[in-house]
Image (spheres, each protein chain N blue to C red):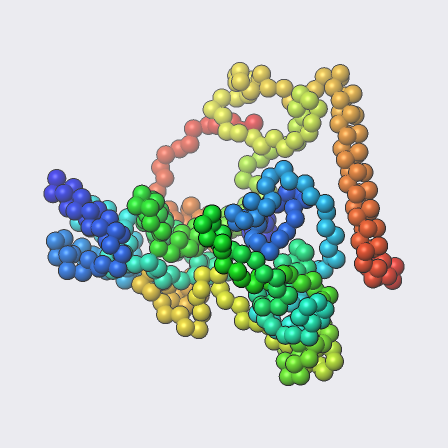
Length: 215
Length: 249
C-alpha cells in the first residue's frame, strides 16, 4: 500500500516562479509564454485548500462584477493555481486569430478569466446566486449545500479522459468481462511469486548457487 | 522461405491498409489462408476467464509474427475501441499464476502497439488510439507494484526487513553520511582490489568542511523560513480575512 502511494506522486515539475495562464503547462503555447529561465513578478493568490474548492467545469455560475454582471453561464475552464474561472461567453474581449501576412485574421470574442470572488454558484431551483458550503449527507456523501435554501447543488457530469461512458460500454474482443476482472483467485501463502510460478510450471531448480559475498 | 515470402506479403498489405484509410482488406485475406481464423482464436482466448486458460503454446503458422499486428479488421481504422486499464484493487485479488499470464498478454499487446506506433511514424500518419499504449503500460506497472507489495509483506514477516538488499549508513571521503547498499561479489572483500580502493572514512582535516556544510544548510533553511514568513505577511495584508482566521486559531 505504501509503495503504491509513493510511486503515484510522479507529476510534472514546474519551475519555482511559474506563472500559470489559461493554457495547460505542457503545451506549446505555455512554453512560448513561459520559456525556461523566465522570471516574472510573483502574483499572490488567496490560498484555498484542495478540499474546499467549490466550482467545477460544467457548473452554472453567475458573474457578480464587471461588464457582464448579473448574467449566468457555464464554466468552461478552471485554473486552480490562480483561483480563475473562465465562463462561456461572458467577460469577453475581442481579438484577431490566425493572422498571416496576407490575411487580417478572424475577429473573435475570447473570454477573460474571472476570480472566485467575482463569481457565485447558483441555486438549481431558484436560479439565484447563493453562498455554498461542503456538507455531508446522511449516507455519508460529501455534497455542496446552498446556505440560503439548504438545497443540494449536484456536481456537474465529468467525462472520462478517454471518452468512455461506462453505462454504454460493450466489451471488445480483447477486454476482460467485469466478473472475470473482479474474480478473486488470490490465496495468500508463504511462497514468493517466483516460487509459486515455478510450482505451477513444474520447474525444479536443481542447480546450486555458488557462494557469493555481500558487502 | 515460403514463410518469409508470406510475411513480406503480410507486411505489404498492412502498410497498404494504413495508407488507404478506411479500405478494409476483407477479400484480400484469401491470399493467406488460415490467418484470420488463427487471429480470431487468439482474441477469443484472451477474453476467456484467465484461471481456465492453460498455458498458450499454440504453434501458429508464419512463425507467429502476425502477433505483432492488430486484428486485421482494425487495420486502416482511425480509432480503435479499448477498455480501461487494470486497476490495482482488481489485481490485488488475482493469484500469481494469473498475474504471470496477464503480464505476458500485456507484453504482447504492448509490442503490437509499439510496432503500430513506429509504422505510423514511418508513414507520417497519426497512430490510431494511442491511449491504448498508456493503458497497457499503466496495467503492467500496477502488476509490478502488486508483486512488489506481496514480496515486501512476505519479507517483513520472515525477516523483519523491508528492503531486498541489506545496507548500512557509511561515510564517504568528504565526510557525508549516506545509505550504502551491499552488492553481490564473487570474492571476499579482503581480496577485492576495487573495493579496497574505496574510502569509507574521512581524515581529520575534513571536520572544518563538515561544519561549513552544516552552516550552509542552516542558512538555506533559515532563508526559506524567512521567505515563507514574509510571503504569509504579504498574503495577510492583501487578504485580511486570513489574518483574522489565523488569530482565531
